[in-house]
Image (cartoon, rainbow, N blue to C red; front, side):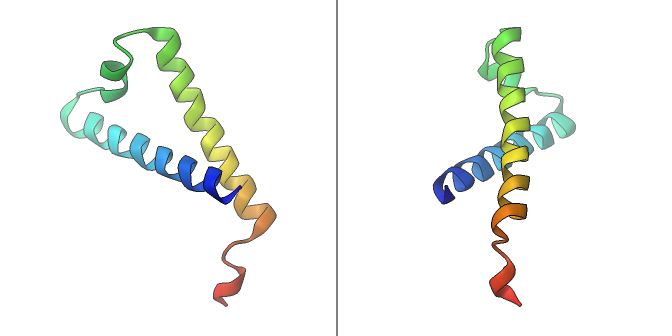
Amino acid sequence: MKLTTLILCGLLIVYGLGACLYALTGVDLLRLVTAGNAVLYRALLSLSGVAALWQLFFFIAFRPTRGLR
């Protein structure tokens, strides 16, 4: 479960970097990776939504920051 969380966190970081690149230069990296395929593009975008929901679930259910107090 921790490995899944780390992978999805890395995926969200990559999506965030792609969004920064798009905001600064106008180059849509995700569109380039999917070669303009709309179905694949939307599937990868939905994967980012699932990753964000998984992170939220993990932080609520397992409270990984509890030991930092």
